[in-house]
Amino acid sequence: MSAQPAAKPPLAILPLLAAAAFASGCGARMLDPLLPLLARDFHVTVAETAVVISAFTLPYGLSQIVLGPLGDRFGKLRVLVLGLLLYGLAMAACATAGALDRLVLLRALSGGLGGAIIPLAMAWIGDNVPYSERQATLGRFLTGMVMAQLLAGPIAGSVGQLLGWEAVFLLVGVLAVLMAFGIMATLGRGLWRPVPSPAGGSGFSRYITLLKRPAGRLLLIAAFLDGMLLFGGAFPFIGSYLIQIFHLEPWQAGLVVAVFGLGSFAYTRLARRLVNGLGEGRVLLLGGLVLAVGLAGLSIVTTWWGVALCQVLLGLAFFMYHGTLQARSTEVMPEARATAVSAFAMALFLGQGLGSVGFGITLAQLGYPGAFLLAGVGMAALAVWTRVAVLAPR
Image (cartoon, rainbow, N blue to C red; front, side, top):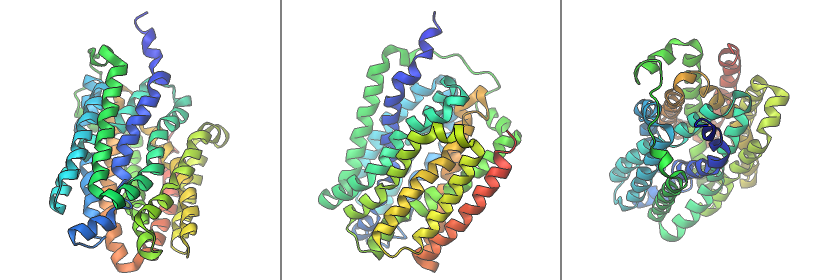
């Protein structure tokens, strides 16, 4: 009888986890339409403000070294909730930054704390949902992150233009704190019950175990390249592209960027059918190649609505590709899922931090069309390699 309640939480708690993912996703994506405002207020170029993106993503990735083992040892949901609460406080503190260097430091703190949210939620889903249903369940969970993709840009652009970028940070911080208290109130005392220690060695030794497995090594390389080309490389600069090349207002650019979420939302509804009908390998390959087409399309469109069409395509294709990798991360080391998923997130966001700097350098040399085209070529190569090298062993 004691094991029966543990079978019920996935359906009951999934909306709360999605809401936490929404708060985390807003923190990661809200800067897309705000980079020009930051550049104006801090008297730097848009390319120089890219450090604010890296300041969040690099600590997000590095914090996984600690967060994964902590989740396995003390409970995934417990560590998630504490991280969400502190993340919200750190995001609100970003509103007090009066200089770029202070904002960078506070963004680094919020990124490190925010790293506890999505990876640990995914690991918990992996513990409670069979693999045959996992990608569809992860798709439902990622609705929160997708809605952040859909709403973070318009909200940040509108609020930033009306009240300043500081108000955007405050709004996201308050939202995260409210979500943390909501989860705590729903789970009650069950959140703080002791959890059994996982088998398979001490916390950090599990990373060595993961790296010794060929499937684990290849998955981490794929995640790193995924983050470098997409999360950090191309996606964060689309808002600035719309503002600087098509002369949109920040709130308008935010709306165009947000239609990425329409394609992503379509994936969350279609994930089960896509995987059952095509299989994991074809879903991943098709998604990666369509991503390459969408990025190349950004390099040749001549209107803002052309960018919007590319964004819808990119949203659907991204989660076809990335969602498959995420599902694999929950199964590559079942005995310590939080550690495995955190390692995946660490590789992803380390790649993202490097990608934002690299894309900024490429942007300065080749302009937006050349930078997007180069990212598309890289994505096509990555899609083929991932299909052959990472998914083939299963």
